[in-house]
Length: 335
Image (tube, rainbow, N blue to C red; front, side, top):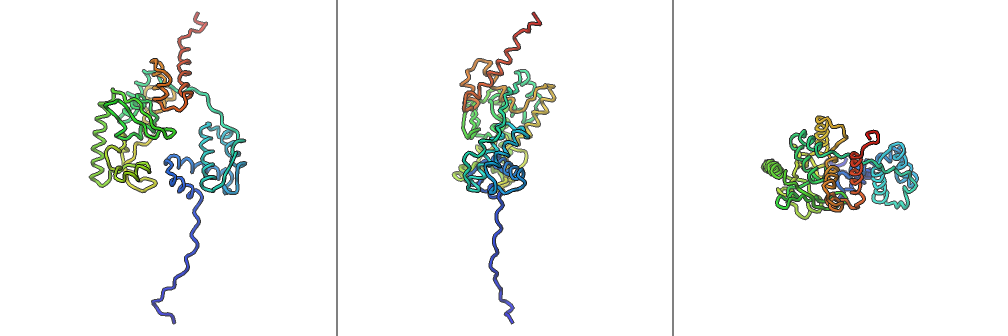
C-alpha cells in the first residue's frame, strides 16, 4: 500500500499555443502603438483571414494580399487611405508577427481611387448658428475646434498644460504623423475655458479623494514619471463623465470624452439649424482654414497652423475659395 500522504507529481502538459491575433496584439502593445491603431490593425487582420475562409496567413502570401486589397477597392469601394491602412496592417502581421518578409506585396493590387471631392465648409454665419445650437461642454469643444483648427481627436486629447492663456496658444502633442505643433487659442473663449477648467479641477480633486485621479500617459512618460498620472497638469481638458477601465493596464481612471459623443452633439446641432450641408466636427477645421485664407492669410501660415506636412494638402482650400468665387459670376441667362 502507498502511504496516504504521498503526492504524485505529474509532468506539466504542453502549454496551449497563443492564438495569432493575441500574439499580434501583444507585439503591437510591446511596440507602444496607440489603442486606435491596435484596434484598426487587429480588425484588418481578422477581415483578411475571414476573406480567405479562415486560412492561416502563414499559408498565404502576396497573391492573397493583393486579392484582399483589390476586393476592398472594387467591392468595398473604400477610400485610398483606408486601403493603405489595411495594407500596413497586413505588412505588420507578416513582418512583425510571422517574421515573413513580403517584398513587393500588394503592388499589383487594384488601388482605391483618391476621391477628388472638396471638403464641406460652412460660412461664418453657419458656423455661429451650429455653435449656438450645440449645448453644454460640446459648445466649448466646437468653439475650440473652429477657433484653433484642431482635428477632433487632437482637441479631446489636450491636457491642461497644453492650453496657454498668456501666449494665446494651444500645443498639440503627438498629432497626426506623430508631430507636435502650436496653433491659436482664441481669446474670445478664455473666460469660458477658465470656468470649465475650474470645474474639471474640482472633479479631479474628488477623484483623488476617492482613491482615483489617474489619467492615461504614453508609455515613455509613464515610465519616466511614474506619479505624473495623478498631477493636475496632465489631466485631460475634456474628461469623460465617468471613470473607466483602461483596456490595456486594467487601471480605473478618467479618460477624455468619447469622439462619438461630440459627433452626435454636432449632428443634432446641424439638424436643429436646418443646415443641409453634411457638417461634422471636422467641418470646423475645414472652415477654420478656408476663413483664414479668405481674410488674406498666406497659405504657408495656414499650413503650419493645420500641421500639414505638404502644402499641397492645404492647397485644397484654395480650390474651395475658387469654387465660392463662382458665386460672384453672373450667369449669361441673367444678362
